[in-house]
Length: 125
Image 1: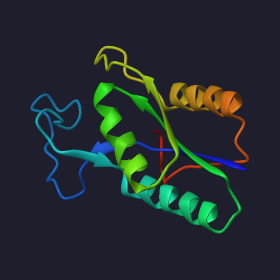
Image 2: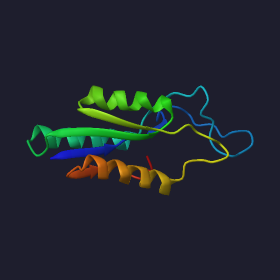
Image 3: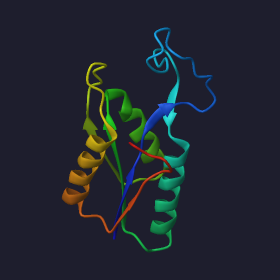
């Protein structure tokens, strides 16, 4: 069985988040980013299932800018077999909506045909 794990790049949990001066969101320029901690748990669970013999392959997937490749490298370093990066350059005028991300991940899942898809808690990847 193949396991697909969606992972997301977020502001590092140890960083104090600052609101933008125009109050349209949080400041992400020059801020340390890392894998969502709940996504890390999802990757670990997929790896446990592979080690137990319930899965043959663990594939990490993300949707985001080029910098999201760092998150995929983290998943690969943790033990994922492959990584899929659906590149999306951020446009403040047209942000990527959660429904759009879900549709993209659905397309990835249909192509990969995993036996199990694992997402982190409150994950919009």
